[in-house]
Picture (cartoon, rainbow, N blue to C red):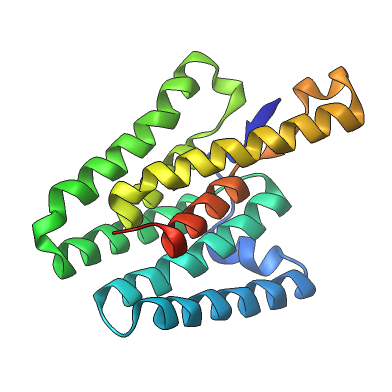
Length: 191
């Protein structure tokens, strides 16, 4: 089973991709983004952690919609989000700078190595999204990645059972699974 979510060279800008989503999908993304942002303030109170999370979580919702629609994770969205989250984390929690940086690099490396071995199986967009998860979650990125792999494995088994062994080469968007793991770790992870 091939996972997709690559950022393609010459891909449309982030805003063009957002506008290319159907009206219903844009409304759903806006509603879900607002809901997760509010949930961040409810869960974490009003402070640095809530602010970073209230940016991070809606970005995951948007990237999920785009990846499901286009099978790519645009640099125009994921890279500025990564920069903002990493800088904000360091500004709000300077004593954990090493954790934010290492978690970001480690999560990216975790997916970059398989990309080197089998480039068709995953895209660089997934690697960059993993870096964003690490920057936002710190040590809790381990929970995000573990839950991502568990859920994507279950989905792969369901697809194989339903469609047969011929579905082994079927491409599925990996970004939504990473986003799910990220949100799960954000709200349930311990820091």
